[in-house]
Length: 386
Picture: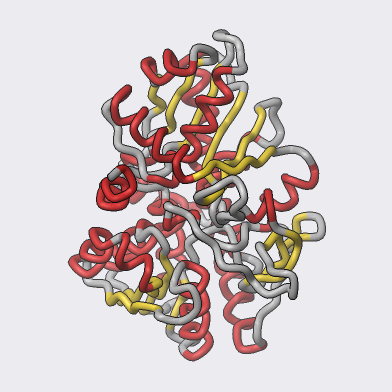
């Protein structure tokens, strides 16, 4: 598990957290070589999570694109309705292995909070979730789900009251309770070893894409597309494809207008330190973390995982920004063309995939990771569409 990806990554944390991070790294290194741990992870992924998730040919969406075929990796069908289950299960099992009875987590769109609450209930671990007050209002169904699953939800009312501030609150809690608590970080961000560890648990997405693509159309796809906030579903998609010829496209939140920075740190940010790691960060002229805005709570974050920063600079992956209204269009396309309600996060990726399909030959294949389902976003979509 690399500590850095080129210049990016590292561990910029208070001394209080260093032993906990070292313990987490030791535990994970041992667990990944332990057949019993791997067997339990696989058993619960299949019997509780519902893996493998299918690869679906979006026939009517392909017709809309009038070019390359579009296939969907259906992470929205995973237990809880999003890819977040993969990482929550893995880290929950690590918390058990470390003998820590309490989980804390941050959440933006609420899907990671729901996944953590589900895993906490299944493994018998006390669970508390920090969520920005703005996100609580726009993701009320997921707040209700977390509470029904037995988790305590803490509203965060400082700062912009979104994901960045929820992470800050969770880190403060972890510093105060580090001996009994595991911070189940939800994305491929933060100090080492979290970016590598989260990527490892989420790489099941890309591994299944490799196997299922060969079965479905006889080869690997030409292009893999995933939305990027912190970047966990995208790095899980990309990681197993890095040593292939598959093109990689990450899609960030562009916000309301072409002049808005939105939450597109790779497209419009610059290198800096946020939440314990060096990566691309949206900053103001004084170097302070800038406010973000996106219709999608899960992409509304000022930073990005360090491996994505390295992939951007190296040219191995491309990153583009999609605006709110474009994501809303893609939401309607998938609903009307395929009978699938996507979360607003992967709706950004759907829009970019259709745009790519229009520039490509019908013989090419595009796989989009549909990272979550759209139940949680219906109120937001209805308001936005009037």
